[in-house]
Structures are given as structure tokens and as C-alpha cells.
Image 1 (cartoon, protein in one colour):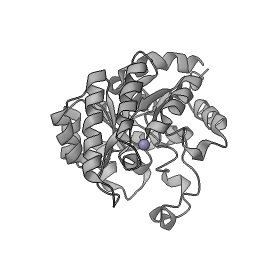
Image 2 (cartoon, rainbow, N blue to C red):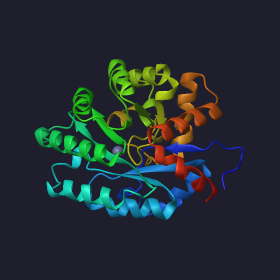
Image 3 (spheres, protein in one colour):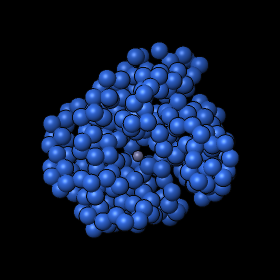
Length: 284
Ligand SMILES: [Zn+2]
């Protein structure tokens, strides 16, 4: 039971199935609940993880998404797209299955087979469209490529997670019914563009995420040099969400209550099946 004094937060992007949590997952979940994180969305990154992500969501009253992440396309077989189609069909009535994801394009990491990534992205957009599900998108230097795909295969909106593109690109995603995910990167003083977006985008376009165990907020680093070298002193986890939310509240001049209410409503608008999970998760 969440005490009435605490806001109820939704972490719209958390890789709780990652090996970083193998040693203490129940404690991570308990800390998240104690911090008022009522619900987490667990996106899969490859077909081999579909069953474990689903089992984790069911065991703890959380939400999940099924998809093949752009950084995992090169180690996935073409047949994994069929496995995704099968899983989406098999679980179509599962209230915990809220989206297709994490899918997208990454034009930052060198050495990826980009033609193959485009093919997987398009194929997964079609599966989402056919299933009537929103999508959770990964963007890194790839906003225009993602938008091009969405014009070809329109889907029921969703979330562009860890949003890091331009204001013009943000407006195009919002115009297509997407919400934009903000998390740990927003807490870095030097992330000027992300902080500008978090301050100025329309209220209805913002959702919160940790992307745990990745993108640790600034307070999990000891020094700026460590941050530049990508060496966090602590692992990111969903219990960090309220403190990340306080950064958003500060940037927008919102109270914490306002921040929780607005971002939770936006998350439910982006991923409509979340609405069916919010109450059981709060009561559990
Ligand atoms: Zn992710």
C-alpha cells in the first residue's frame, strides 16, 4: 500500500530483467514501491528475453513490452521477427502487454548493419500496427529515420524513450501522438538541449523513466570526469525516479504532486493498457 502522502510514479522504461539486477531484484522492487513508483514498464530487447520479461511483469504486477532493440538486431535471426509475431498473437489479450518495444534505430554506435536495422524497425512497426499496440522507440542520432518509418507505417503512438533530438523533431513526434521520455540525462547540468526540451515542451508530451540500470542520474557519479568516462559509482534503479522527477519539477516550476499527476496521466495516454494496471499495482 502506498501511503497517501506519497505521489504515485510510473517508470515508463526500466530493464528490470537486466543481469545487473540478478543479485537483488526483490530488494530493487521493494525500494521502488517504497519510493512511490507504482508501476514500471519493462521493455524486452531480444526474443530470447520475451518469456522472462513477461514472467517478471506478471510476478510483480508490472507492465511489459515485446520487441527487438536496434543494438540487438545483429545478434538476432530473421526468424526472431516471427517469434515476435507469435508472441504478440499469443498474448494479445494480456493486460500487462502494453506496447511493442524496445524498437528503433541507433546511428551513433559504430559498426551496426544499418540496412538490417531499418528492416527490423519497419517489420516491427507493422507488427505493432497490426496488433493495435503503441511502440516504445529508441532514438540516438536517428530521429529523422524513425519519423520516416512512422510516416510509412503509422502506429498508435507510444513513447520515444530517453529523448535526445531537436525541438523540431520533438514536435513532429508529438504531432504523431507520441510522448517523450525524460530521465537521468535531464539531471546533468551540461545536458543543455535535453533540459531545454524538458522545460519547454507541452505538458501533455512528457513522461518519466529511469532506463535502469542505464543512464544513472548525476548523483550516482562522484565526479564530472567519471561521468564523462561513463563510470557511475552506483547502478541506476527505479527507486531513483522521484528524485529524477524533482529535477523535472524544478525545470518546469511544478509541484511534485503536479509532476506525478501530469506524467502519470501522460504515460497512461501513451500506453492505454497501463490504466488497467495502476490500481492493482497500488493496492499490491
Ligand atoms: Zn531501453
